[in-house]
Image 1 (cartoon, helix red, strand yellow):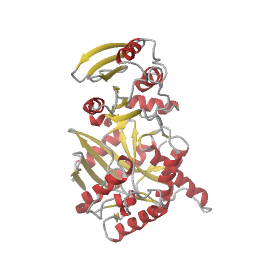
Image 2 (cartoon, helix red, strand yellow):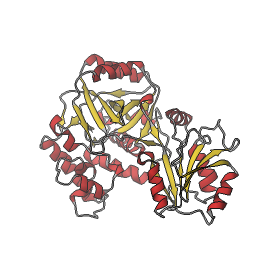
Image 3 (cartoon, rainbow, N blue to C red):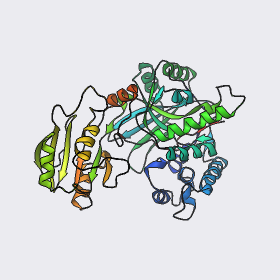
Image 4 (tube, rainbow, N blue to C red):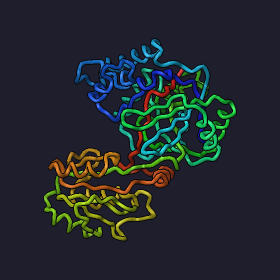
Length: 414
């Protein structure tokens, strides 16, 4: 069962939240963070991307950079830009995008649940990225940024969310990207108890976004437990910061591909090869978006095409084989274009659906890329089924939007 607990959050005073809160560390580079934090000493980027406090080009893995994160985290608290709550709380965090709002519960998730597989993952992680975030957690003794979980819909938790959000929000603002962020503190002991008990009846939590942060946070907690001869199991380091959303609230958007060349084929030869496994229908110059599972959108030489995988080219009984990302990776990228490693091949790039099909067209029309492929998005059910089966999705399969805003609340490990 999923074990969570309330915690004493460290967070900005209401009047400072828009100055402190930031995008997650991994969605922008150092120079973008430097630009966004320009003139704002309260920006969380000074803690999560502290290389911006050094000369441009400073390696973000330099020891001085990690030390600067600790110095800045301490200064934020000393200056009153981050303040610890006076008691343990859960929090409700809602995000609004395109008129649609999703509501999550901010919890301290259990390290043992991650280590023992009750917090389930669907992506592989890279050890170098894990180690970077482990060092950041370890040196600050805190989870500065949350991870993004999903859980099966639960009536008790939906009622708590509804009741709490009927009151005034602690934070309520629109970020520069146009997304709304709304945040409530759960103070009623009965509601806090209801949340704890409801999660205790849920068999598993699912990592939606933030696999490296999840791994890093859990591994540091496990490390602290191993190194503490007086370890009891109830210490704060046994938990890490997460925002958990009911699965029905979440919307996975498409994650598309652009490729630099046709692997020596002419456009006519490429389309002929596609005919072997797909029904290819020209759609002209008007944008075409995939309409269902196993239907793809192709943009080539100024024209859009519908590709529909022929029966027999996929296995609906195989949780990985049925995915459109698998079908396209095997039958188009590998067999026709010769791309075998999506993580490292420089001939391919990936475009989050938040940018729209127009971005695919732009990159092909510019001459930078030769062909673009748009996929029908994965469903939350597919993601959870794959995690339940113990399988791992292929790279670059899911894209969640909006991203969690960092800096709304922090979890300290002591």
